Image (cartoon, rainbow, N blue to C red; front, top):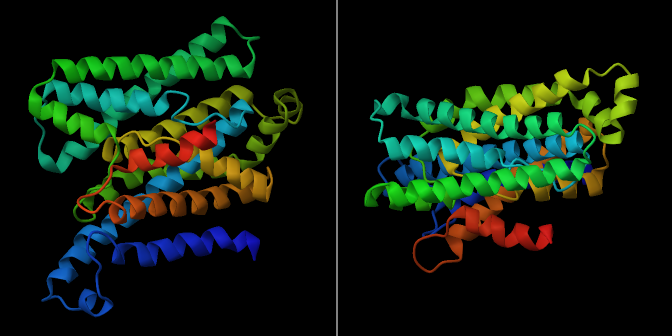
Length: 313
């Protein structure tokens, strides 16, 4: 029963969360195409919750992979600067005001975010090459430093941008799930789904890497190849998610940590538990963002930070 709880919670969130928000939706109205709540439910609420579900699952799995690779429970795409690199890529495109056909804009922003992720990872790998015997904690600190650099560059871009772009950048940096329709989900699917498959295919290698890198090498694991595949997969995932939702922090830190404490370090099990727990966690945070304020809604990045920061401490 305990092993099925995350699946149950994530499916429950998927079903119930679209019904609640600034205004509640009655079940009878979601099957009546003539009613206004029908449009609100199917074109706004359902795509939003699906995005929360996918984003929470993806960030949690990315954090799980990084925590195994670095053998440290503080590792995540957010703390290592990967999400910051993706955010920088999107911010640069926004500042340059490159005009693109609306149909292709999501793909273009995802590409810019992916390049930003690769830059962040390149800095971490360069640091590792320069100090090959450095402790894992030093790599984490290098990632945090890179994240600060990227945040500074984003602030500089905001300062140089025109007022309209500043407003949109500030709100985007706080994280948000405001989408209309299902096309944005189709745009990020080619990035998120292959990345999840790559990480799942490396679950045995992650078990060995989390135990000991030397043990993994003696068991035939190709360390360099495995590292590159994990970095590539997490970069693809972060690129798609960050370009659409903004840099949402702490999901990849909190969820795998809880999953590992409850279900153990076996990544064959932990993969699915992280996926479902991450989906539920972000859907729950989004629900709080929509229900708690008397008017409007909170950016979801604020809610995840309020929950994740005490957990981090």
